[in-house]
Amino acid sequence: MKTATDNETMGPRAFTARRLWTLACGGQGVGPHGGEPLRGHVVLTEGGRVVSIVPQGEIPPGTEVVDLGDVDLAPGFVDVQVNGGGGALFNDTPTVEGIRVIAEAHRAFGTTSLLPTLITDGVQVIETARAAANAAVAEVPGVLGVHFEGPFLDERKTGAHDPDHVRNAGSADLDGMFRGAAGVTLVTAAANKLGDGVLEDIRRRGGIVCLGHCASTFDEASDAFGRGATGVTHLFNAMSSLGSRAPGLVGAAFASDSVFCGFIADGIHVAFGAARAAWKALGSDRMMLVTDAVQPVGTDMTEFSLGGQRVQVKDGACINEEGNLAGSALDMASAVRNAVKHMGVPLGCALAMASRTPATFLGMDAEVGCLVPGSRADMVALDSGGRVTAVIQGARAVTAC
Ligand SMILES: [Zn+2]
Image (cartoon, rainbow, N blue to C red):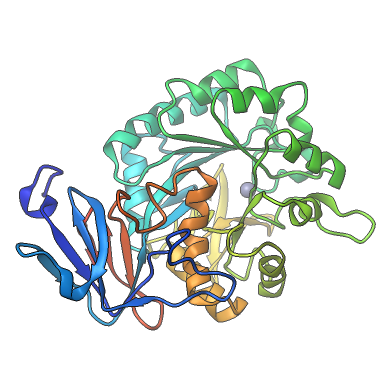
Protein backbone atom coordinates (compact mmCIF):
# COMPACT_ATOMS: atom_id res chain seq x y z
CA MET A 1 0.00 0.00 0.00
CA LYS A 2 1.50 3.28 -1.06
CA THR A 3 1.14 6.24 1.23
CA ALA A 4 1.13 9.98 0.79
CA THR A 5 4.77 10.11 1.84
CA ASP A 6 5.88 7.55 -0.72
CA ASN A 7 8.75 9.18 -2.59
CA GLU A 8 8.19 7.19 -5.73
CA THR A 9 4.61 8.37 -6.15
CA MET A 10 5.10 11.88 -4.86
CA GLY A 11 8.15 12.73 -6.94
CA PRO A 12 7.89 14.55 -10.27
CA ARG A 13 5.74 12.77 -12.83
CA ALA A 14 4.57 13.61 -16.32
CA PHE A 15 1.22 12.23 -17.42
CA THR A 16 0.88 12.07 -21.14
CA ALA A 17 -2.02 11.15 -23.41
CA ARG A 18 -3.01 11.76 -27.01
CA ARG A 19 -5.59 14.38 -26.05
CA LEU A 20 -5.55 16.50 -22.91
CA TRP A 21 -8.50 18.49 -21.55
CA THR A 22 -7.38 20.86 -18.79
CA LEU A 23 -10.76 22.66 -18.76
CA ALA A 24 -8.95 25.65 -17.28
CA CYS A 25 -11.13 28.74 -16.96
CA GLY A 26 -9.64 31.65 -18.84
CA GLY A 27 -7.27 29.32 -20.58
CA GLN A 28 -8.29 26.21 -22.40
CA GLY A 29 -11.98 26.74 -21.69
CA VAL A 30 -14.46 24.67 -23.62
CA GLY A 31 -16.97 27.35 -24.70
CA PRO A 32 -20.38 26.44 -26.04
CA HIS A 33 -18.93 24.19 -28.72
CA GLY A 34 -16.75 22.07 -26.51
CA GLY A 35 -13.36 23.42 -27.53
CA GLU A 36 -10.43 21.34 -28.61
CA PRO A 37 -8.10 19.25 -26.48
CA LEU A 38 -4.39 19.94 -26.26
CA ARG A 39 -2.22 17.51 -28.16
CA GLY A 40 1.44 16.74 -27.51
CA HIS A 41 1.22 18.09 -23.97
CA VAL A 42 1.80 16.55 -20.55
CA VAL A 43 0.59 17.20 -17.03
CA LEU A 44 3.56 17.67 -14.72
CA THR A 45 2.84 16.74 -11.12
CA GLU A 46 4.69 16.69 -7.84
CA GLY A 47 3.51 15.94 -4.32
CA GLY A 48 0.10 14.93 -5.63
CA ARG A 49 -0.52 18.33 -7.25
CA VAL A 50 -0.35 19.70 -10.77
CA VAL A 51 2.79 21.78 -11.30
CA SER A 52 2.21 22.82 -14.91
CA ILE A 53 1.03 21.79 -18.35
CA VAL A 54 3.91 21.75 -20.84
CA PRO A 55 4.68 20.49 -24.35
CA GLN A 56 6.05 16.95 -24.41
CA GLY A 57 9.49 18.22 -25.40
CA GLU A 58 9.80 20.22 -22.19
CA ILE A 59 9.58 17.42 -19.65
CA PRO A 60 12.30 18.17 -17.07
CA PRO A 61 15.03 15.56 -16.65
CA GLY A 62 14.44 13.11 -13.82
CA THR A 63 10.69 13.09 -14.34
CA GLU A 64 8.89 9.75 -14.40
CA VAL A 65 6.76 9.62 -17.55
CA VAL A 66 3.40 7.85 -17.39
CA ASP A 67 2.06 7.38 -20.90
CA LEU A 68 -1.67 6.71 -20.74
CA GLY A 69 -1.89 6.06 -24.46
CA ASP A 70 -4.54 6.89 -27.04
CA VAL A 71 -7.02 8.42 -24.61
CA ASP A 72 -8.76 11.63 -23.61
CA LEU A 73 -7.20 12.73 -20.33
CA ALA A 74 -9.42 15.04 -18.29
CA PRO A 75 -9.87 16.28 -14.73
CA GLY A 76 -11.32 13.62 -12.43
CA PHE A 77 -15.09 13.84 -12.09
CA VAL A 78 -16.78 15.73 -9.26
CA ASP A 79 -20.14 14.33 -8.15
CA VAL A 80 -22.12 16.45 -5.70
CA GLN A 81 -24.86 13.86 -5.14
CA VAL A 82 -23.85 10.31 -4.26
CA ASN A 83 -26.06 8.32 -1.90
CA GLY A 84 -24.37 5.01 -2.35
CA GLY A 85 -22.29 2.59 -4.35
CA GLY A 86 -20.37 -0.64 -4.03
CA GLY A 87 -23.40 -2.14 -2.26
CA ALA A 88 -23.36 0.51 0.50
CA LEU A 89 -25.86 3.28 1.21
CA PHE A 90 -24.71 6.29 3.23
CA ASN A 91 -27.95 6.36 5.26
CA ASP A 92 -27.47 2.72 6.28
CA THR A 93 -23.73 2.96 6.94
CA PRO A 94 -23.03 6.56 7.97
CA THR A 95 -19.44 5.71 8.83
CA VAL A 96 -16.00 6.43 7.41
CA GLU A 97 -15.86 2.86 6.13
CA GLY A 98 -19.24 3.22 4.45
CA ILE A 99 -18.04 6.40 2.74
CA ARG A 100 -14.83 4.65 1.70
CA VAL A 101 -16.76 1.81 0.02
CA ILE A 102 -18.94 4.31 -1.83
CA ALA A 103 -16.00 6.49 -2.91
CA GLU A 104 -14.01 3.51 -4.17
CA ALA A 105 -16.95 2.18 -6.18
CA HIS A 106 -17.35 5.53 -7.94
CA ARG A 107 -13.62 6.05 -8.39
CA ALA A 108 -13.57 3.15 -10.85
CA PHE A 109 -15.85 5.27 -13.05
CA GLY A 110 -13.65 8.35 -12.92
CA THR A 111 -15.09 10.17 -9.90
CA THR A 112 -12.23 11.51 -7.80
CA SER A 113 -14.24 14.04 -5.77
CA LEU A 114 -17.65 13.57 -4.27
CA LEU A 115 -20.13 14.59 -1.61
CA PRO A 116 -21.58 11.58 0.20
CA THR A 117 -25.28 12.40 0.28
CA LEU A 118 -27.65 11.65 3.12
CA ILE A 119 -31.31 11.52 2.25
CA THR A 120 -34.04 12.48 4.71
CA ASP A 121 -33.51 10.76 8.06
CA GLY A 122 -33.70 11.32 11.82
CA VAL A 123 -31.55 13.84 13.64
CA GLN A 124 -29.31 11.18 15.11
CA VAL A 125 -28.44 9.80 11.69
CA ILE A 126 -27.70 13.35 10.55
CA GLU A 127 -25.28 13.83 13.46
CA THR A 128 -23.58 10.49 12.83
CA ALA A 129 -23.29 11.19 9.11
CA ARG A 130 -21.77 14.61 9.76
CA ALA A 131 -19.15 13.14 12.09
CA ALA A 132 -18.33 10.41 9.56
CA ALA A 133 -18.02 12.93 6.73
CA ASN A 134 -15.75 15.13 8.85
CA ALA A 135 -13.41 12.19 9.42
CA ALA A 136 -13.66 11.07 5.79
CA VAL A 137 -12.58 14.49 4.49
CA ALA A 138 -9.23 13.75 6.15
CA GLU A 139 -9.08 10.00 5.60
CA VAL A 140 -10.82 9.10 2.34
CA PRO A 141 -9.32 10.60 -0.83
CA GLY A 142 -11.77 12.74 -2.73
CA VAL A 143 -14.38 13.34 -0.04
CA LEU A 144 -15.11 17.08 -0.17
CA GLY A 145 -17.71 17.30 2.60
CA VAL A 146 -21.31 16.18 2.83
CA HIS A 147 -24.66 16.77 1.14
CA PHE A 148 -27.85 16.66 3.20
CA GLU A 149 -30.73 16.06 0.81
CA GLY A 150 -33.60 16.74 3.19
CA PRO A 151 -35.20 16.56 5.65
CA PHE A 152 -36.50 20.11 4.98
CA LEU A 153 -38.50 19.09 1.91
CA ASP A 154 -41.88 19.96 0.49
CA GLU A 155 -44.52 17.42 1.55
CA ARG A 156 -45.91 17.57 -1.99
CA LYS A 157 -42.61 16.38 -3.55
CA THR A 158 -41.06 13.84 -1.20
CA GLY A 159 -40.29 11.30 -3.95
CA ALA A 160 -38.55 8.28 -2.42
CA HIS A 161 -37.84 10.13 0.86
CA ASP A 162 -39.61 8.91 3.98
CA PRO A 163 -42.49 11.41 4.48
CA ASP A 164 -42.53 10.63 8.20
CA HIS A 165 -39.10 12.21 8.54
CA VAL A 166 -39.79 15.29 6.38
CA ARG A 167 -39.96 18.28 8.69
CA ASN A 168 -39.34 21.98 9.22
CA ALA A 169 -35.82 23.12 10.00
CA GLY A 170 -35.06 23.23 13.70
CA SER A 171 -31.93 24.09 15.61
CA ALA A 172 -31.24 20.43 16.53
CA ASP A 173 -31.09 19.43 12.85
CA LEU A 174 -29.05 22.46 11.83
CA ASP A 175 -26.62 22.06 14.73
CA GLY A 176 -26.20 18.39 13.78
CA MET A 177 -25.59 19.21 10.13
CA PHE A 178 -22.86 21.72 10.88
CA ARG A 179 -21.20 20.29 14.00
CA GLY A 180 -17.43 20.47 13.52
CA ALA A 181 -18.02 20.90 9.79
CA ALA A 182 -15.01 19.90 7.69
CA GLY A 183 -15.21 20.60 3.98
CA VAL A 184 -18.32 21.63 2.12
CA THR A 185 -21.86 21.37 3.51
CA LEU A 186 -24.54 21.28 0.84
CA VAL A 187 -28.18 21.34 1.93
CA THR A 188 -31.02 20.51 -0.45
CA ALA A 189 -34.25 21.98 0.85
CA ALA A 190 -37.59 23.15 -0.48
CA ALA A 191 -38.33 26.86 -0.79
CA ASN A 192 -41.29 26.53 1.59
CA LYS A 193 -38.93 25.27 4.31
CA LEU A 194 -36.41 28.07 3.90
CA GLY A 195 -38.44 30.99 5.26
CA ASP A 196 -38.19 32.58 8.72
CA GLY A 197 -34.45 33.05 8.35
CA VAL A 198 -33.66 29.36 7.78
CA LEU A 199 -31.89 29.95 4.45
CA GLU A 200 -29.88 32.80 5.92
CA ASP A 201 -29.01 30.64 8.94
CA ILE A 202 -27.66 27.85 6.71
CA ARG A 203 -25.63 30.37 4.71
CA ARG A 204 -24.28 31.98 7.88
CA ARG A 205 -23.10 28.56 9.06
CA GLY A 206 -21.21 28.21 5.78
CA GLY A 207 -23.66 25.99 3.94
CA ILE A 208 -24.50 25.98 0.24
CA VAL A 209 -28.22 25.73 -0.52
CA CYS A 210 -29.90 23.92 -3.38
CA LEU A 211 -33.62 23.96 -3.97
CA GLY A 212 -35.03 20.51 -4.48
CA HIS A 213 -38.00 18.26 -3.71
CA CYS A 214 -39.93 21.48 -4.05
CA ALA A 215 -43.34 22.42 -5.49
CA SER A 216 -42.74 26.17 -5.21
CA THR A 217 -43.99 28.77 -7.62
CA PHE A 218 -41.64 30.71 -9.87
CA ASP A 219 -41.81 33.68 -7.49
CA GLU A 220 -41.09 31.60 -4.40
CA ALA A 221 -38.12 29.91 -6.06
CA SER A 222 -36.79 33.21 -7.44
CA ASP A 223 -37.07 34.73 -3.97
CA ALA A 224 -34.97 31.88 -2.53
CA PHE A 225 -32.36 32.39 -5.26
CA GLY A 226 -32.32 36.08 -4.44
CA ARG A 227 -31.67 35.24 -0.78
CA GLY A 228 -28.71 32.98 -1.48
CA ALA A 229 -29.81 29.56 -2.77
CA THR A 230 -27.33 28.87 -5.58
CA GLY A 231 -28.35 25.52 -6.97
CA VAL A 232 -31.11 23.13 -7.97
CA THR A 233 -31.02 19.44 -7.11
CA HIS A 234 -31.86 16.94 -9.87
CA LEU A 235 -33.47 19.41 -12.25
CA PHE A 236 -36.96 18.36 -13.39
CA ASN A 237 -37.30 15.56 -10.83
CA ALA A 238 -39.48 16.13 -7.76
CA MET A 239 -40.16 19.80 -8.49
CA SER A 240 -42.65 22.20 -10.08
CA SER A 241 -41.94 22.13 -13.80
CA LEU A 242 -42.01 24.82 -16.47
CA GLY A 243 -45.55 25.58 -17.60
CA SER A 244 -46.54 28.52 -19.76
CA ARG A 245 -48.60 30.15 -17.00
CA ALA A 246 -46.89 28.47 -14.07
CA PRO A 247 -43.13 28.57 -14.69
CA GLY A 248 -42.32 26.83 -11.40
CA LEU A 249 -38.89 26.01 -10.05
CA VAL A 250 -37.61 24.83 -13.43
CA GLY A 251 -38.62 28.14 -14.99
CA ALA A 252 -36.99 30.08 -12.15
CA ALA A 253 -33.75 28.16 -12.69
CA PHE A 254 -33.82 28.87 -16.44
CA ALA A 255 -34.62 32.55 -15.83
CA SER A 256 -31.83 32.98 -13.29
CA ASP A 257 -28.47 34.31 -14.45
CA SER A 258 -26.43 32.24 -12.08
CA VAL A 259 -27.90 29.15 -10.42
CA PHE A 260 -26.35 25.75 -11.07
CA CYS A 261 -28.49 22.73 -11.85
CA GLY A 262 -27.62 19.13 -11.15
CA PHE A 263 -29.31 16.58 -13.37
CA ILE A 264 -29.32 12.83 -13.74
CA ALA A 265 -28.32 11.97 -17.32
CA ASP A 266 -29.52 8.38 -17.39
CA GLY A 267 -32.40 8.92 -19.81
CA ILE A 268 -34.70 7.52 -17.12
CA HIS A 269 -35.03 10.41 -14.67
CA VAL A 270 -35.09 12.99 -17.46
CA ALA A 271 -35.77 12.34 -21.14
CA PHE A 272 -32.67 13.22 -23.11
CA GLY A 273 -34.67 15.76 -25.14
CA ALA A 274 -35.58 17.66 -21.96
CA ALA A 275 -31.99 17.41 -20.79
CA ARG A 276 -30.76 18.84 -24.08
CA ALA A 277 -33.31 21.66 -23.89
CA ALA A 278 -32.04 22.49 -20.41
CA TRP A 279 -28.46 22.39 -21.62
CA LYS A 280 -29.31 24.80 -24.45
CA ALA A 281 -30.89 27.15 -21.89
CA LEU A 282 -28.27 26.91 -19.15
CA GLY A 283 -25.04 25.95 -20.90
CA SER A 284 -22.24 23.73 -19.66
CA ASP A 285 -21.16 26.30 -17.09
CA ARG A 286 -24.40 25.88 -15.14
CA MET A 287 -25.39 22.25 -15.78
CA MET A 288 -23.81 19.62 -13.55
CA LEU A 289 -23.88 15.91 -14.14
CA VAL A 290 -24.74 14.06 -10.93
CA THR A 291 -25.36 10.38 -10.43
CA ASP A 292 -27.77 10.41 -7.43
CA ALA A 293 -26.51 6.84 -7.21
CA VAL A 294 -27.61 4.32 -4.63
CA GLN A 295 -26.15 0.91 -3.80
CA PRO A 296 -25.86 -0.87 -7.19
CA VAL A 297 -23.06 1.21 -8.80
CA GLY A 298 -20.00 -1.00 -9.16
CA THR A 299 -21.92 -4.18 -8.31
CA ASP A 300 -24.19 -6.64 -10.10
CA MET A 301 -27.00 -6.19 -7.57
CA THR A 302 -30.49 -6.65 -8.98
CA GLU A 303 -32.30 -5.87 -5.76
CA PHE A 304 -31.64 -3.85 -2.62
CA SER A 305 -33.37 -2.11 0.25
CA LEU A 306 -33.88 1.66 0.44
CA GLY A 307 -35.46 3.08 3.58
CA GLY A 308 -37.10 -0.27 4.31
CA GLN A 309 -38.51 -0.57 0.79
CA ARG A 310 -37.50 -3.28 -1.64
CA VAL A 311 -36.04 -1.76 -4.81
CA GLN A 312 -35.37 -3.65 -8.01
CA VAL A 313 -32.86 -2.74 -10.70
CA LYS A 314 -34.57 -3.15 -14.07
CA ASP A 315 -32.91 -2.02 -17.30
CA GLY A 316 -30.72 0.38 -15.36
CA ALA A 317 -33.63 1.89 -13.40
CA CYS A 318 -34.12 1.54 -9.64
CA ILE A 319 -37.85 0.97 -9.05
CA ASN A 320 -39.49 0.61 -5.63
CA GLU A 321 -42.57 -1.43 -4.75
CA GLU A 322 -44.87 1.44 -5.66
CA GLY A 323 -43.31 1.64 -9.11
CA ASN A 324 -41.49 4.91 -8.41
CA LEU A 325 -37.87 5.74 -9.14
CA ALA A 326 -35.74 5.28 -6.02
CA GLY A 327 -32.27 6.61 -6.73
CA SER A 328 -30.19 5.66 -9.72
CA ALA A 329 -27.71 3.04 -10.86
CA LEU A 330 -25.81 5.63 -12.90
CA ASP A 331 -22.06 6.15 -12.80
CA MET A 332 -20.33 9.34 -13.91
CA ALA A 333 -18.57 7.87 -16.95
CA SER A 334 -21.94 6.66 -18.25
CA ALA A 335 -23.42 10.11 -17.59
CA VAL A 336 -20.67 11.70 -19.72
CA ARG A 337 -21.21 9.15 -22.50
CA ASN A 338 -24.97 9.74 -22.39
CA ALA A 339 -24.51 13.51 -22.61
CA VAL A 340 -22.37 13.10 -25.73
CA LYS A 341 -24.34 10.34 -27.39
CA HIS A 342 -27.92 11.16 -26.49
CA MET A 343 -27.92 14.89 -25.72
CA GLY A 344 -25.64 15.94 -28.56
CA VAL A 345 -23.23 17.66 -26.17
CA PRO A 346 -19.62 18.03 -27.38
CA LEU A 347 -17.16 15.97 -25.34
CA GLY A 348 -15.41 19.03 -23.89
CA CYS A 349 -18.73 20.35 -22.58
CA ALA A 350 -19.75 16.99 -21.16
CA LEU A 351 -16.40 16.71 -19.36
CA ALA A 352 -16.84 20.23 -17.97
CA MET A 353 -20.32 19.38 -16.71
CA ALA A 354 -18.80 16.42 -14.87
CA SER A 355 -15.88 18.27 -13.31
CA ARG A 356 -15.26 21.99 -13.70
CA THR A 357 -18.86 23.12 -13.31
CA PRO A 358 -19.63 21.22 -10.09
CA ALA A 359 -16.23 22.29 -8.71
CA THR A 360 -17.09 25.92 -9.49
CA PHE A 361 -20.50 25.47 -7.88
CA LEU A 362 -18.79 24.28 -4.69
CA GLY A 363 -16.22 27.09 -4.83
CA MET A 364 -13.46 24.52 -5.21
CA ASP A 365 -12.38 25.02 -8.82
CA ALA A 366 -8.83 25.98 -7.82
CA GLU A 367 -8.57 22.62 -6.09
CA VAL A 368 -10.47 20.13 -8.26
CA GLY A 369 -12.36 20.01 -11.56
CA CYS A 370 -9.61 21.62 -13.70
CA LEU A 371 -5.98 20.78 -14.36
CA VAL A 372 -4.20 24.00 -13.41
CA PRO A 373 -1.02 24.68 -11.44
CA GLY A 374 -1.71 23.93 -7.78
CA SER A 375 -4.80 21.81 -8.32
CA ARG A 376 -5.00 18.23 -7.14
CA ALA A 377 -3.53 15.82 -9.68
CA ASP A 378 -6.85 14.01 -10.12
CA MET A 379 -7.48 12.73 -13.63
CA VAL A 380 -9.53 10.30 -15.63
CA ALA A 381 -8.51 8.69 -18.92
CA LEU A 382 -11.24 7.70 -21.38
CA ASP A 383 -10.97 5.69 -24.56
CA SER A 384 -12.71 6.74 -27.77
CA GLY A 385 -15.86 4.98 -26.59
CA GLY A 386 -15.89 6.98 -23.35
CA ARG A 387 -14.84 4.00 -21.23
CA VAL A 388 -12.53 4.63 -18.29
CA THR A 389 -9.04 3.24 -18.89
CA ALA A 390 -7.27 4.80 -15.91
CA VAL A 391 -8.01 6.94 -12.88
CA ILE A 392 -5.33 9.03 -11.22
CA GLN A 393 -5.86 10.49 -7.77
CA GLY A 394 -3.23 12.69 -6.15
CA ALA A 395 -0.86 11.72 -9.01
CA ARG A 396 -1.26 8.05 -8.14
CA ALA A 397 -2.86 5.60 -10.53
CA VAL A 398 -5.65 4.13 -8.41
CA THR A 399 -7.48 2.28 -11.13
CA ALA A 400 -6.12 0.90 -14.35
CA CYS A 401 -8.72 -1.09 -16.25
ZN1 LIG B 1 -33.89 13.47 -4.51
